[in-house]
Image (cartoon, rainbow, N blue to C red; front, side, top):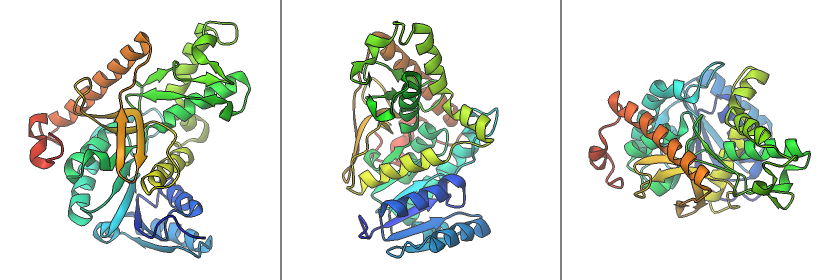
Length: 333
């Protein structure tokens, strides 16, 4: 197999379920001939590496290490699931303090060991905040750091396909924006179901207003449902989608879903949030989204919620006040 690139991809948190699945997915996609697996838990990491070796990916040079400097040195692409996992009864926001501290160190490590990295994807929760912290401490450009947000949109597509009893590929334009959490904005105005605008179906016998509201709750609590069913947080879907993001950043197939990106537009400022984005070799870029008045209001509420989480991290002393951000990262004015 000819790999998409020979440049180094580092998977941070590779001993975990998300990280190990990311490694396998990247290898199965043939993204790079040079992949490094990192995790501080050496025995489990070695076990993951052995599994990859035994899978017979003969085109790839697979290395592994519990030394973060070795893992990041020379890396051009990094994807990190290196935070604590969400457990039963927890919200993404419950993970805030511990994972915020992990994100700060991760950003410092990126700055120290791979300042020439091209793209970084952060997926540990709450991803909007951990991604923002990583960006701040890494010194990278906002276009070089993205976060996983697509999972909410794929959950919307899944829920609609299940409701109407059709294949997922017949449900198009599914979009959620704002926060990757309880305050996400679920858009109906962008979606079609078997060629019909979703807005034309809501409020009809095919999808009553009550069913639509229940469906939105199902989407918002999709991660909670996985925990209830499997006894652990989801790992296969975030693994696959995050590697799709890295593939796009490497110049491969375009990423199909919204992604988390740094937004400073006058409407939403100094925040990482899900937007309509494009990921290319040149980075991640977003455009403003416009929905119905109700959708726009929900997006504004999501931004307010994210801003409160950001300000909470500031009050913890993990990141400085906004007016001082440029002293850590001159790209964030």
